[in-house]
Amino acid sequence: MSKNFSELQNSISPKARTLPVIITPDSTTDIMEYAHQNRDLIANYLRNEGGILFRDFPVPSLELFEKFTSVFVDRLESYNERSTPRSEVQGQIYTSTEYPNDQHIPMHNENSYSHQWPRLIWFHCVHNADEGGETPIADSRVIYNNLDPSIISRFKEKKVMYVRNLGGKIDLPWQTVFQSDDKAYVAEYCAKAGLELEWLDNDRVRTKAVRSAIAKHPETGEMLWFNQAHLFHYTSLPEDIRDFMLSYLKEENLPRHVYYGDGTPIEESILQEIRGVYDQHTVKLPWQEGDIMMLDNMLIGHAREPYKGKRKVVVAMANICSDYGLDM
Image (tube, rainbow, N blue to C red):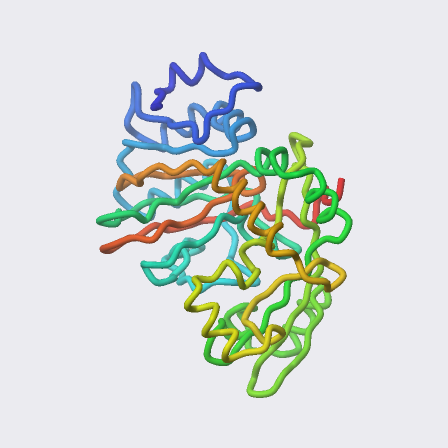
């Protein structure tokens, strides 16, 4: 349901959640003027609902999109410790994940596998696909509250171990992941980030990291399901790709995989239950060209639907958090 500024201003309720809040032009169509005049209102909605879609405002250029983000933050951040291919469009604005059109990208909170992640993330639809290509979203609080308490307890106690094998012909090279070809820098980064690092043959690298599966939001204090266990696990791959990889590689050599923090396997039945809860609580709206979606990356996860035709959705990130309030 679309709401203009006056409707939004009169309907703030800390108990009512609509995902996303949709803001459309009222007295002005200038998105910069609107953002400056209503910065506090936008912040309230972001803190409460977690996601806002700005629709029907003219956004004719990436420069204007970048200026829009500057209303809320002093600077945008680089995409560090990368897990997917993407390209820099300009400055710190990136393409969305460059996976083949026919592949679904599961729900996730950006960089929740890392020791650092952006609190804010913006998506801007420059060109919509002919069919599909939506960016579904889901509330991390709702996921946490709807998972079986025994799953929450197990993941809170054991945490999650992310294993990555970088390089070779399948995954990203370590130089791309760490944005450096200096092995000494990579070793220093891994030591600071809590990544176990192993140099392999043929210029490959294996990393392991034990991270929390649960987070506490630094502003609202709400508990969040905040990990990528269901995404990193090989069962998230399409069946044909999964079967090919397992026929070609041992499990420990898969490009990415995940275990409980103690190294024991995560039961597939539990992963399926997690995916099922995400499916039940996912919101999916079609993109319109010019749309800007602003998310609190801790409160709201996102995904990508397969699509046909050309699609250009760009991404910007800001406000880096580092292991704040986890396991609370």
